[in-house]
Amino acid sequence: MNKRSSGESCCGRASKRAGCCKVESLISVDDRGQMVLPKNVRDKAGIRAGDKLALVSWEKEGRVCCFTLIKVEEFTDMVRGLLGPMLEEMITKSTSP
Image 1 (cartoon, rainbow, N blue to C red):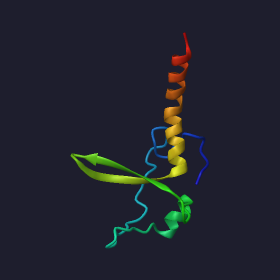
Image 2 (image 1 turned 180 degrees about the horizontal axis):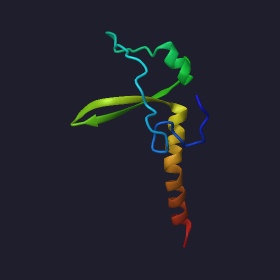
Image 3 (image 1 turned 120 degrees about the horizontal axis):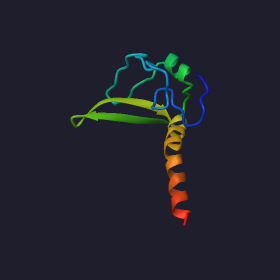
């Protein structure tokens, strides 16, 4: 995977590239609700055993229509990149006369 600066997502609002998302694989859910990410996808994404992933879902008309998995490190950087400037502004405004 390419290195990105903190707060920059490959497919989020910060991305200037179009069409970065694609279907990598079709996966099944077993009787226990478990899914397996194919090895080639794990390797490409740098996902190793024990890694944490954030499950982000979108709802449409009260039902989940799709979801995505984001590595926690990437998600943390995205949140920090979005909220950091807002928090700095709030702190600046609260400490100014």
